[in-house]
Length: 443
Image (cartoon, rainbow, N blue to C red):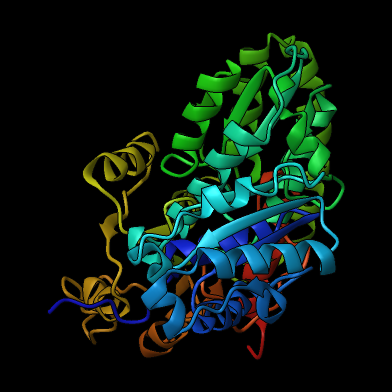
């Protein structure tokens, strides 16, 4: 029987809870057994000490169904729980999400939620049984429901865009990334709804139907939600990789400006100012970087959103030599092709080996299968110095290879992430700083 050692995601319910809990003013209501909420609340800490937030984690409202509900049905119990939640928890939006057990017995949470439609605050229900898929599907299901049932129809507003695709918790830097891209687009006169940054409320989500363009920061996630949004609200979408550093961010801004009909002269002016600051900071470390010979070979291990973006930054912005890039998500052939197409567009001196592998134990084998890392032979090409960018799971891999490491993908339990992000110009500086910190520490 096949199994995944040390998986890098939870179930669909977990992804749904991460997403709802990241929307300021929204409260989830779990319709499942008590263990579901408790276990998933604990897993949230693995997103760089992500935490529970308001009404999340072990404080999440839950029906906590028992044997009685499993035998006779749990809809009445859910009705009681919704009523109690509305009385006790102050929120602007309530979303019922389901676990495997209540899905199996056939409870209908939507019908129960509709009983509260005249309550004054919306109560939605989404079927998120864990067996349906992993965290990424839960994210997609919540967004799709919100776009169809919560977002209001509105007249299109020029230069208003919505951004999603960076997954709460599973992309540990999602808030910092969204904030930086929002800042950059603002310099071009573009108003942005991110839904998940703390300078926004649920009103931004409710009014999102007025956007003239949706930007999905992923080649595989959030696309079904984008299609639903376009179907209901008539807003087209574009799917782009998360831009990190000068090269990718420059390309990103020109693409968005072209789609919105923004004069390229303005983009030139913004980029001139951003690049000046970007390279002035880099200039401060350039002597140490060059004199200390800090160029490294690299292994990048992460999800479908981050692996390409990190690999591109390493090769295009700081001149490193990525040797292996591993995408750890479970993807179908179409999704794999989308990820691969991004790698195919880059001009590498030597393209990294691209692999799709979910099992942590197999990732080390992928790297060592065709290589003798430190063979004592004067004619052997040594992959040294070597640097590993992955999850906390890859710390062991780095130690076995004698390499330095930095945790940049879920799960991250060895560093706390507050408002840090790696997207854009500021994010590129953050990433370079974190990499150099890891290299220079205890040197």
